[in-house]
Image (cartoon, rainbow, N blue to C red; front, side):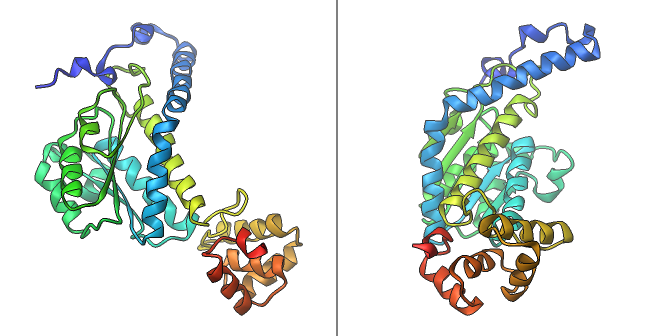
Length: 297
């Protein structure tokens, strides 16, 4: 059995051993200092993140999916990142999926024993009918969560692509992934509380994977989210601003063109940049595989 104290995420942080005696300001300063280490730790593993993103892009281009698999905080972060892809990039809910041990109930409360249930991961993944075009990314701060390891084994056996993200070096989880990311942020500010630095590191890396992969399949023009879905007032206004920023048009022109484009921001941009109708713009986008920039060539 693994001694938890061998894990960096479980070790005591000597710099914060007097936490309970610090003033509020002193505690804030110390916590902020620890948090600054996270981005530096992530920077060191960028070469490990790059091939994962390339695999995700390849999966998307082949009609496959990105599936996050985790328990506790790690699982919640995957679910949240997947959910945000829908409005941000206009993808269907089935393209990026977050699975958490214990299901929906585990998003707001601990589900006893879920992370140790190996059969549960297999059951959750079986419901998705995995294919060789899918990529399953197992996320675990400790790098030893049975639910996640079992899920990666199952995914591999079915021929799906596999990747892992752990916050300890030489993580057990890494043995079961084709591409392994291990980021070491050092001991936590509060001993063993992996929702802190480890959670922040995971959030940063999941942000990178989903955002850059979406850019790689044409969901971004320059640095604009051109496939955003204008599903509420704020997003409608953001859509108009995106059109204005992409084409240098006025607010009135952006509003009118967005309406003519059927609330499709990307199409509205192509219509203005290439001076064409909605029908012609749709054809241009289809021929360019959805990349705005390619319609201008």
